Every structure is written in C-alpha cells, then in structure tokens.
Image 1 (cartoon, one colour):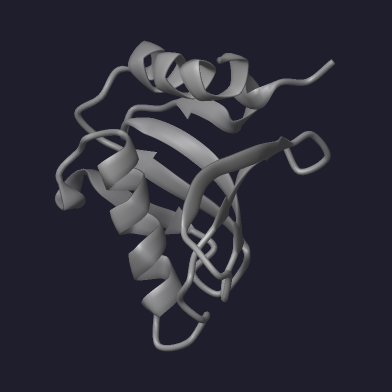
Image 2 (cartoon, rainbow, N blue to C red; image 1 turned 45 degrees about the vertical axis):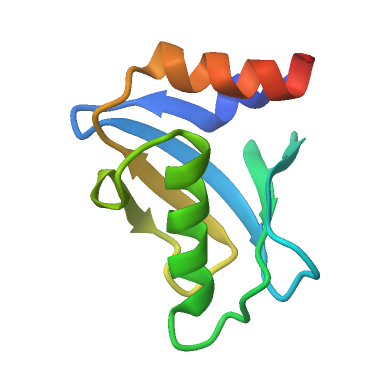
Amino acid sequence: MTSYKDAIKGSSQGVLLSLHVIPGSSQTVFPVTYNQWRHSIEMKVCSQAKENKANTEVLETIAQFFQLAGKDVILISGEKNREKTVCLKNIAPGRVEGMLKEFFDG
C-alpha cells in the first residue's frame, strides 16, 4: 500500500513535495487527502488558474502550513499544470513527514 510518504522526497535543494492542486474551490485546504495513483498530496485553492494566482496561493498556503518564510517555498515544476512539485527549504524531511503524519494519522 502506498502512503503520503511517497509524495515527500529529499534532495540537495531541500524537501520536494508532490502536489495535485484543485483551483477554483470554495475554500483553501491543505492537505485534503493523499492521491495514491498520482503519488501526490491533494490541495484546494480558491484562486483560479489565471495570472499565476493559484500558484501564488499554493506557495503561500504551503509556507503557512509548514511555518516557513515565503522565500523558503519554491515552485519547481507544474507552473501550468495541476500536478506540481514544490521545494521546501530550511526544514528537515522528518519534520515535513511528521507534520503530514499528524494530519493523516490523527
């Protein structure tokens, strides 16, 4: 069985997080659930996918969840796609995993 841990990867840049983003939602929610087929964590954002607004909201929401400065969350891939990879800097992979574990496992 796959788990949310498959969406977390360490790299020389920082911690890479695979996301599936649903824009135009009624509320911003991170994390929503783990998508086992895409091996990514789903999130919803209120902004539409126009003029980079959804991407900006994604980065701000991730930074807030992990208690990071905005400059420590960088969009690596998926600028014009729902499948995105973000890089989290100045945080240990174990801390990312622990914060997500608290959400998914209670």
